[in-house]
Image (cartoon, rainbow, N blue to C red; front, top):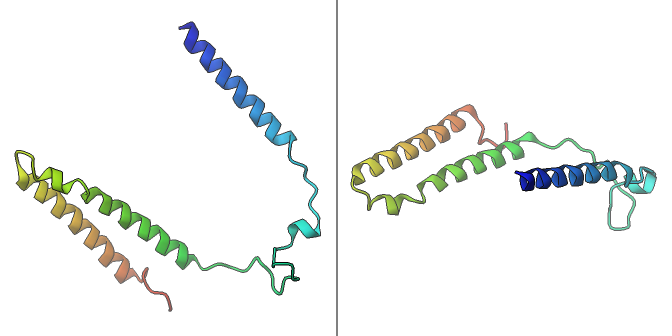
Amino acid sequence: MNLVVLILSINVIISLILAIVSFWLPLMSPDYEKLSPYECGFDPIDSARLPFSLRFFLVAILFLLFDLEIALLIPLPWGDQLASPLTTFTWASLILFLLTLGLVYEWVQGGLEWAE
């Protein structure tokens, strides 16, 4: 029990020291050069703070969602060797049906449209 308390106290002390140092260490002296966007040595032409289309984020999130769900099908070849391959086939079919249903929903809602 003493070893656990010692390790926890060392972790808390190191965490507190790092948190305190992280607030004291950075020098907050912003100037025009530090705040300006880097343009390979040239003066910036436009503002670097232009609005970014949320469609890119939506497509990225949809890609991650469907990509992670496809990863659920990776153990499928090993599932065929179980005592009941019909159960494996049923679960795989259910996952594919849900993926297709999600894709159709996004398509109908217009989430895959680039232009309006």
